[in-house]
Amino acid sequence: MKYNSTRDENVSVTSAEAIVKGLGADGGLFVPDSIPALALSDIAEMVSMSYNERAKRLLGLFLTDFKASEIEDCVNKAYTKAKFETNSIAPVYKLDQSRYILELWHGPTCAFKDIALQILPHLLTTSAKKTGMDKEIVILVATSGDTGKAALEGFRDVEGTKIVVFFPDNGVSSIQRLQMCTQEGDNVFVSAVNGNFDDAQTGVKEIFTDKAYEAELSARGKALSSANSINWGRLVPQIVYYFSAYCDMLKAEEITMGDVVNICVPTGNFGNILAAYFAKMMGLPVGKLICASNANNVLTDFIKTGTYDKNRPFYTTISPSMDILISSNLERLLYLLSGGNTAEIKRCMNELKENGKYAVSPELAALVADNFYAGFADDDKCRETIKKTEAEFGYVIDPHTAVAVSVHERYMEETGDSTKTIIASTASPFKFNCDVLEAILGAEAVEDKDEFELLRLLGERFSLRIPNSLAGLEYKDVRFETVCDKTMMKGVVSEFLS
Ligand SMILES: *Cc1c(COP(=O)(O)O)cnc(C)c1O
Image 1 (spheres, rainbow, N blue to C red):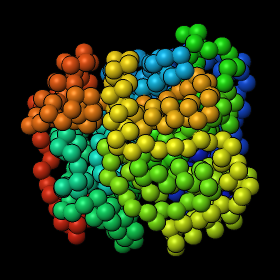
Image 2: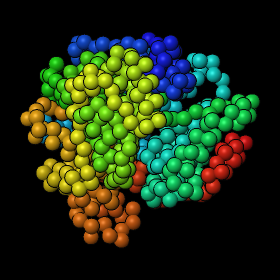
Image 3: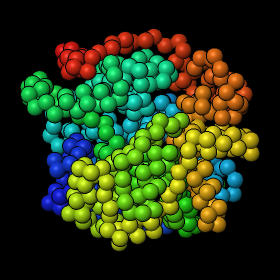
């Protein structure tokens, strides 16, 4: 299998090259040139497998230039009980007859990005070896919170890599700051940047595009890379858990082989739901894909109208990981649905860059609407859903998951379709303990409490076990206290590397 670029039909690279490069030279995203098909009998074979065995089977279909032993090595390093606090890695929790919560947050940072970022470093270092790239890989990340910590955990002590994470000094929660500044590992560095997320992001971009610096690092045997969510190596591991959930539902006799399920995903950059679309294309019996947004509902409008328009107010919500106005991975969907129409994709992406807006052809808009249902939930709706879900089922969900549960409810009301649905749960409620507790118990319950009191309150009140990674945070040593100016970021990187 080879990989093409969404913006240039002449590009054809191996999966290892696609993972090392991350992004095409033309700015396009890498997409497989065919989609492997699984028969129901293939899915049946996976029912008795462990998560890791399912991952090996499915990754092997896409990473055809990898040896089976290489994939096995990557999978087994990424998905361990020690890191995920559960053998099943991504367990399914049955809420009621039609709703199955796919818990994607058992990893070391308590959010779904761990599933991709635990394996990406291994896929990346293996890919580098396979393509003859003999440099040490230096990962640079600008983060508004979650991605930075998940990348740090993924890359920590991975041979042949170093990682530097920058976060805005006044732009992350105190628990996120503590998570990053106490990061362990010999190959990691963390620094706050004076300013907001854009300042940190701009600083990192400047380093990436500095040709002289690239040459200087290259001479010292180092190459910069990113752990960006558009890297194919982050997308492909996400396909696995949709198959895994279906297999687990079969195993628990909640469905029988071939039954169609819907999938509902709280969406930001469109990576997670795109993985579900891939699963469907591969033969997983999936009906509707339900795209759930928060108040930043640019995708809701796009799926309903075929016009993507980011010229709108940006809202800061209680589901911050979905506060996004440019959903980069949507480009891959448009490429696939348009039958690989690179000219059309290029036109849309140029218009997006120039006017912040594009409209796809009516035919393409119809295909999008055919596959996807879209809706959004604002913060009030989200809080209401957290409260209601706890009251009805004694099950506590985080704000991102609540957006999905709310939109799915609306979908059922609107369409009368009560098909069993896999709802992706993307963060542990502990990670957003303040908003979760406030939604259920009211504002007084959280007043004057610090993060650790809130963790204990959530745990005790609802008989939940505090994840080890958060419980231990209070007693960890702070290793990183650097705060730098935007103009000093390159210096921070250089000093760490010397
Ligand atoms: C990143 C993230 C999302 C959005 O996922 P996309 O793949 O960007 O659509 C949703 N919830 C949480 C908790 C996240 O961290």
